[in-house]
Length: 222
Image (cartoon, rainbow, N blue to C red; front, side):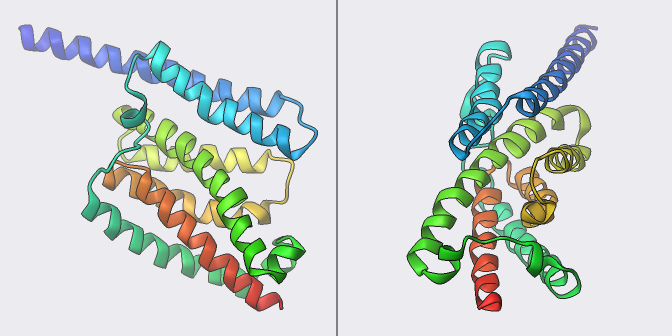
């Protein structure tokens, strides 16, 4: 009897947390879309505020959970992380190759001129802007959205985090081709986070994918 009461209470708490978290996710996305930005600096600030700082505030103040582990910033399962990262890199790399070969991707995908012409500019671009976006997307869509919704949705949370990211991309004031590599890798990133219980492997493998992919794009357009 006591076990049933405790289980029922725990289930109700999980349901309540799931509903509150879902509302908060929509709230963050809505505020981000609503907030006016006029330059790249403001874009960086809004991304950090709505996709990093607000989720951290929510975890710490509302849910009263430890920040790093709740966001999947931990070692996790190393073997699973490496195994699924290798698989994801191979699969996403193949999908991106198909995009390059069979679509207008090369005509639509944009790399700054100096990035394509100079190695150090390329490295600065990848370890600056690209790394920043990977960090923000991993913290919010995998660390926050996936790990918070997984307790109620199970493996379906992988599809949900991808769907939310897709909506985010489709409503962004930018060409969808620029987000194509992120979109291709998003479901795989969810799988890696799920299997490894960490966003470190999904983030690092996504960063590696971008460096290899952009390097090949530079080679093709020269």
